[in-house]
Length: 141
Ligand code: HEM
Ligand code: HEM
Image 1 (cartoon, rainbow, N blue to C red):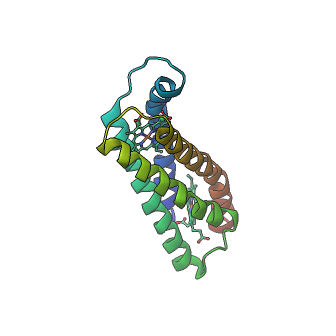
Image 2 (cartoon, protein in one colour):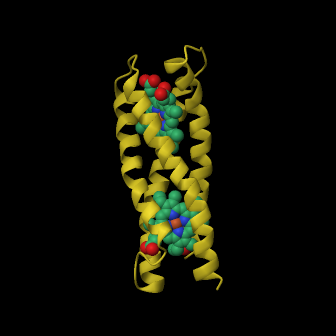
């Protein structure tokens, strides 16, 4: 049970790197005046998977810690970074859905979307490091 969350979040974070790779040509086209092919539908579909997995994984992590050790926040940094990912995921999702429902040429909303998601991804990469420490200190100790 305790292994589901780390494996799920690792898969979601790897997928997020690919979704960022898909969004990059769009960033270049929107802001750097370059041409490139943006795989819109695939970016949106896989991006939604990432957000659903991250959020489901977050809830599962909280539940697992509560069940196993009877108290949340004991993982310290891992708990707090996890919580701070929530607004980034929400912001990235809402801006993504707005742009997907009403396609238009935009400059600032895609930028806000990119910032929300890239911050979420950087925090998720930090969670890999703090998460490995949780495995070492709590599960393998
Ligand atoms: C971790 C997940 C995601 C990452 C890293 C990501 C990243 C990006 C980046 C870097 C861009 C280019 C932004 C710019 O031009 O400034 C972009 C564009 C876009 N993303 Fe995402 N995204 C993610 C998830 C999503 C989701 C969940 C949706 C939809 C619900 C979505 C919908 C879009 C759309 C529609 C655009 C094109 C915006 C436009 O130029 O009009 N993305 N994304
Ligand atoms: C990607 C690598 C990650 C690893 C290796 C990892 C590892 C862990 C481990 C071992 C636990 C203890 C509970 C359990 O095993 O089910 C845990 C709890 C938790 N994780 Fe992660 N995690 C990762 C990513 C994430 C991400 C991306 C988030 C946020 C979206 C997150 C949020 C949480 C939260 C909120 C808890 C509960 C902490 C507490 O109540 O003190 N984790 N994580």
